[in-house]
Image 1 (spheres, rainbow, N blue to C red):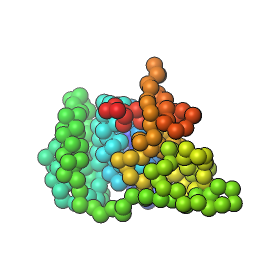
Image 2: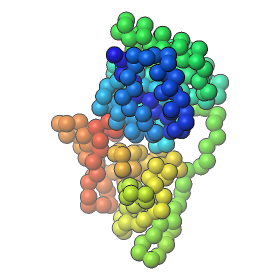
Image 3: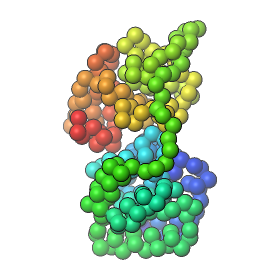
Image 4: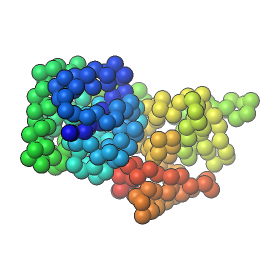
Length: 256
C-alpha cells in the first residue's frame, strides 16, 4: 500500500483533497494531514511517504521550501504541488515534468496525476533533477502574486508595559501556547499573536523556522553545530542560551 502526506492550510480544501484521493486511489494510505509547512516537513522526514501533496502557499515554510528540504530528508518521496499560482508557475511545472493540481482540483486531473504517480513508482523513477530545476527556476523568476511587506516592528508586553520592538532586534521567537515570546538581547516580551500567524508576516529571507515552536533571526546566529543524530544546535550572538534545530529543518541551513 502506498502512503501519502497532504499539506494544505485550508481545512475544507484539505478535507476535499483527502476525499478525492480516497475515490481516485482507494489503496492509498494518507498517513498525515498537515496545515502548515513545518508539520509537513516533519511528517515527510519521519514517515518517508511515497508521495507528498503540497500546497505552495502555506504558513511558515512554503510548499516549494518543503519540497527542497524533503529532497534530502526523504529522497524517495514524489511531490505533487497544489496551486492557484499564475501562468508563469504553471508553465514551469509543465516544462519540469512535475505533477501539479490546479485549484479547484478537478476529478479528471487528479485521476491522471494518480496514474502518473503509480507508473513512476513502479518504474522506480522520482524526478529529483526536474524538481531541483523547477525550484531554481521559480526562485529566480518568482511569481507575480502580491504579498504584503514583512513586519519591521512589533508591539509586545513586558509586565504591564507595552513596548515597540524593531523586528531586527529580536534574536528568536518562541511559541507560548496561544501567544509568542520575542527574545531580544535585553530579555523577553510577549506578543498576543500565535507563532503561526507571526511567521506569515516575517521576512522569510531573515527569519527561519528551526523547530515547530521556534523561529530564529539569521542575523542573530553565531554558529550552528550538527550532532550525530542529525539535529542541530544554534548559538546566538547576544543570548546565552542555545536553540535546538529539528533534524528536518537542518537542510535549510546547509549553505551556512
